Length: 118
Image (cartoon, rainbow, N blue to C red; front, side, top):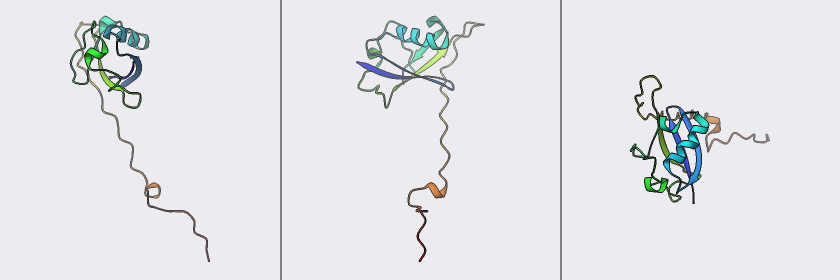
């Protein structure tokens, strides 16, 4: 069955779909196609920020079609290995910003339609 994923790293979000039998390594290869970073330089984390092992299937990591739907994809954290010293960055997902408040004229209950004059 298809599962839908939201892979997040810092301010970047990628939306991917895969099978629940897809391995973490296969998912890393999909991400490589987007980021140009080799699977060996990637670490993936589940929603509890636990490291996902390359030979595990997504369903083994709790990502199934019951929880990873198109309208509510499962979130996966992504961290890269530092090219210079080989250390791993911390998994970091920047919070999304909130939209600005609606102006008064656009709020529900504020009927601003023109009324005909008598």
